[in-house]
Every structure is written in structure tokens, then in C-alpha cells.
Length: 109
Image (cartoon, rainbow, N blue to C red):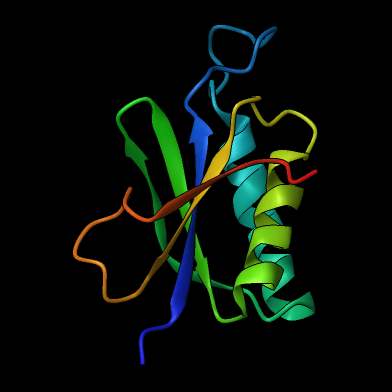
């Protein structure tokens, strides 16, 4: 049976107010650190390395039921410094590519 995978799509927007020499997307590392903590708290596992996909950066989580994974995705979208406009795609580990599945706007109401 295929495992549920939630893709967290975050608009690839530079953080305003940084120096020209600063990394323009510090929220990527912030999200990665948060997801590592979620592995311990919620059993949501990082499914694959995040990657740039067009105008978004995508993080992949699995290892829990859909509701728990969407709750984690919602918390990611609400982190301070994360660009607005994030959404999740609910898929599974048998999908041949990402970006397919059911779209869920984040954060959840």
C-alpha cells in the first residue's frame, strides 16, 4: 500500500531587508530545522530532500496520517519569515513526479 506524502510548496521569494551578501532564502533552513523537530514530535518524516521547482521550493513529508501531515504543513506555512502563499499537495510515494495530487491551501483554517 502506498504511503501518503504531503508536498509543502513555498513561494521562492527572497527575504526582504537582508544584506546583499546574505543568503536570500533563510526560511529554507528554518523549515528544514522545523521538520527535523517534527520527526521527533509527530512522526512526520522528511521523505526526500527539498528542491526548487519553478517558482516554489518544495519540502516532502510522510510517515503519519494525512491529517497529521497537513497539520505539520500548516505549521510550516505559519512560521515567521516564511513567504505567504504556501500550499500542500497530497499525494503518495508511488507518484511518478511531484506537483500532482490534491491541493490544500495553507495555513489551514
